Length: 308
Image (cartoon, rainbow, N blue to C red):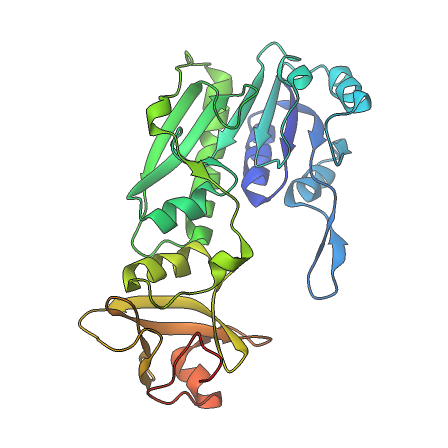
């Protein structure tokens, strides 16, 4: 089947790879423009662009799809279906109606729950027990189109956004190939269950130690690998990468109750967190024991404050 593919990050690259492996003819790839990345902030191609170039596929990187030349390029590619996975741009009506099979979207949640840009992180932050993949027939709304295929997976207690992303990317690629091979009957979404997964704001990464330890522990996992849950001491920023809940600890929120090789115990609004892996700004991710060998953190210190 002739397909135009639109996607950007690693999650989307898994679907593009699966389409090629299944024998589909990807006649055009749309992806976001190269973005500055790394310490040198040099422009870096998306994961989808890199994969497409490896296979000699034609790539376009328009900053917007509201352009007659883009519609003309997609029309010339003569797609039987358009597939979208984590692309980052809304498709205008002209593209949605262009191909005989319409536009299929690979979305990392069990729609209608977590429509929007950050479904994996929002599911973790909310403490959801399950998530999954939805293959959806796109319409002009934001993830509002009818469902073609859907499959759930459990969220493990130790899952991070990174581990959950990788499992969902594989599942999404598998379901996409199935949906194209044997198109199921679409069914409408139940609007009563709709929730919105807004983009992660920079301020959300800051740990508020007044919140319960269970919520902060989910925040740590939801923001791994990016942007990382952050706290500070005397103006120095730290990222917390791994932590577990410690019951029965009572102290002012943010107070370091223990700083030992097994972890740094910090009081929260309810219970405490034992931090077992963290990173000082400009440094490397370290286990608590290695971190404490180079940074003294006294019992009674208050994190999240400017006065230590």
